[in-house]
Amino acid sequence: MSPLQILFLNMISSSPPAMGLGVERASNDIMRYPPRSKGGLFTWEVIIDMIYYGIVLGGLSLANFVIVVYAIGNGNLGQNCNASPFGQECAPNDPTCDPIALEIACHQIYRARGTTFATITYILLIHAYNCRSLRDPIWTMKLYDNKILFWSVFGGLLTAIPTFYIPELNSKVFKQLGMGYEWGLIVGAVIIFEIFVEIYKFMKRRYLKPLEIVEGEGLKQQYSLNEYP
Picture 1 (cartoon, rainbow, N blue to C red):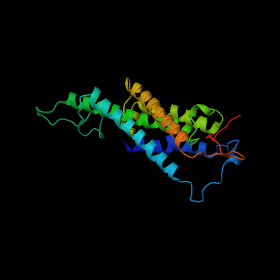
Picture 2: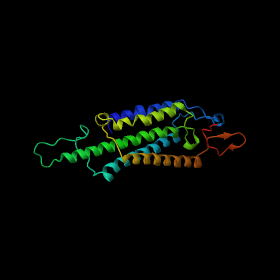
Picture 3: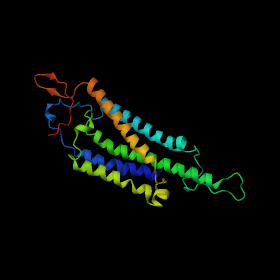
Picture 4: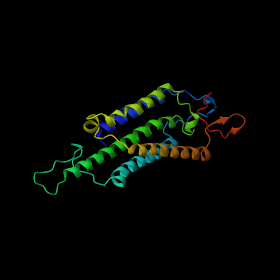
């Protein structure tokens, strides 16, 4: 990925949703939970969550890059593609250099790079809603309940699109190109990621210690952290 892509992910795709999560209101049944551990916010559950989600996100992003370059493309990584989407210029009278092949290879890399960038961007934005609860499924949460989070995610989804299709901005600044069929890979990766998230949360609800204490019932089989009216 290019430096500007990484900066975009940190500043645009991650920061506004994080601020939205920072103003997330408390759940209605918060007083029914036991006191939090004094060990800090980074419990073993949270640490394992980060590792698991990171592995799934990284695997899907890498898979999309490999599919574009090797499965659909010809596997040529090009030469000097960061300097120009047309690749390295051929030396005069060099019979071994094929400028068309170099250009195709670099265009292929730029599209694969854009696919990877879009995959990470859109998964991070959708994942912001998963982060509202450690264990609740995403369909139990109202999308517009947290307006700051909603508009930061919606704005992030729209803001990324011009980086792919505005000439010069895409190729010279972000080192990527507009995509076609690759959008199918991106949407597929987002869906697969969400499936993995929900399976993981289901396993936690089923096998981990419940989070809620109800007076007179001991540990009730209730895992909801976000009971919305």
